[in-house]
Amino acid sequence: MKGRSDDSVAYPTRRRFLKRAALGAATLGLTGCDRLSQNESVVDTLDLAEKLNLRVQRFLAGARGLAPEYPASMIDATFRPNGSTDPQASRYRELAANDFVDWRLTVDGLVETPLSLSLAELRALPARTQITRHDCVEGWSAIGQWRGPVLADLLDRAGVRDEARYVVFHCMDQLGGEDFYYESLDLVEARHPQTILAYSLNDETLPIANGAPLRLRAERQLGYKMAKYLSGITLVTDFDDIGGGKGGYWEDRGYTWYAGI
Amino acid sequence: MSSSPPVAQRHRTRRRHPGPVRLWHWLNLWFLVVMLMSGLQIFNAHPALYWGSASNFDAPWLEMYAIRDSEGDIRGQTALGPWTFDTTGVLGYSTAGERETVRGFPDWSTLPSYQFLTMGRLWHFFFAWLFAGAGALFVLYALFSGHLKRDLWLSGREWRGLGRDLRDHLRFRFHARSGYNGLQKLSYLGVLLVALPLMVVTGLCMSPTFNAAAPWLLDLFGGRQSARSIHFLVATALVLFFVVHIAMVLLSGPWRQVRDMITGGRRETSAPAQRRPDDERA
Image 1 (tube, helix red, strand yellow):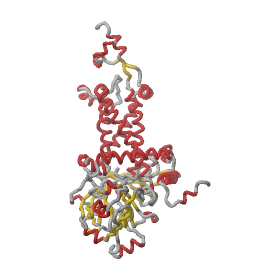
Image 2 (cartoon, one colour):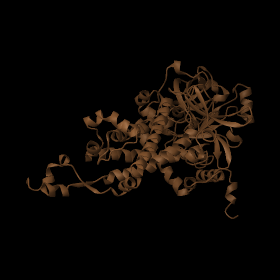
Image 3 (cartoon, rainbow over the protein chains, first blue to last red):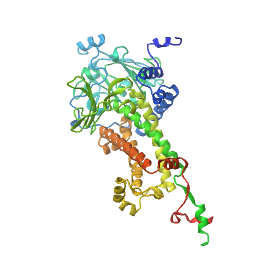
């Protein structure tokens, strides 16, 4: 059939993904409402609420409004891991086998001074400890204590250039086997005082299931924003050319970029 | 002046249902249907409810899941507190399209029908604005037009008569009268001033960014998972209201009821006590 060749493109656009997923699922049954969910203009209209939600919620919470923090008595004994829990990428396996001694976090892109930091160097930086609630997009919550450097300090150390708008987080895990996980925050959320790069969970070294050696904590966002198994941070003006172009692994698969709701 | 009351009364008439009531009623029907069905889609992503801030996965107060029984068949289960019910075919395990599927609520109740969390979220968070916006406008209208005071607020006598109203309703004894009865007023007030605002606020309390804006509101509901549970319980109450509402319409002349909610009904002469002073100007 004509016009079908674009199906072979490695990264589907978000809209095309939604459509294809819907069409696939529609073979299971199709009602009038389902047909609406596959209509591009209907989906585009529903999408309008995302920007409104971002603007209104940002206005209400402010740039520095803090997420609730909890007493140590409320920490969950086991913090439920989600998404990748045991990455199989060979590079990751090698680094993990050697306790991440050879691992480096790179900070590059639109910065004055690109950085490359070892775990020991990150641990030597001033750190923030916070007991916060993690909210999965599925609906459940878990409370854990996280510790690590504040991302804003790291960004200041690298010197963010004026044209930078977003911080992209590159990961070492391939969720679903193919594409590497990645995520992005805008500079407001990246510079939020509770946005940290955690190397510790509940006073212990961050376990592999929860994102060792380093993961993002963005406490005013849903779980899928908080990239695990970090390898690098890139400052960009836009993320059109990264991954599927929607700013994150799940965003490329139909989820909204704004994950504050 | 005292010689002309009949003329004045004839001119001071109002329809049974004012325009804004009818408009909001029918819009809200669609908003609530979309909110409910997309809400069940979201619920199905993790069909379990908890109390408190976090999820104690070992102790949900409500959970839908599937098990394999001794015969090797898959059974849908719904656990409510200490009780477990076999709900195969509806909750926990049901036919979606042509396939049997492990899912909370069945496909005929969710938007979209198939498992698709992000699409459910798109519908829910778009219609939430319409639902909350129209609801807020309607509350303002009810306050300032006098609809709330005139048609919905209960008089002292109606408050005292609620017990008798309830007994009469349970015996299917309905009294024809021009306005709403006490029990009816109470249920409408409960929906408008309690249930619908609770849905909006508990919904917002599930948003981590909104929690940063109003942590006190989260505390008021006892944490995020409690807010999620209350959201679900109030939604259930709204479904029950809907069922009773439909039953009452069916029992009280459905054709006339639906027609009046569309056209507004015949113009009725308002009671002299409710006339405004300038009524006499006619």
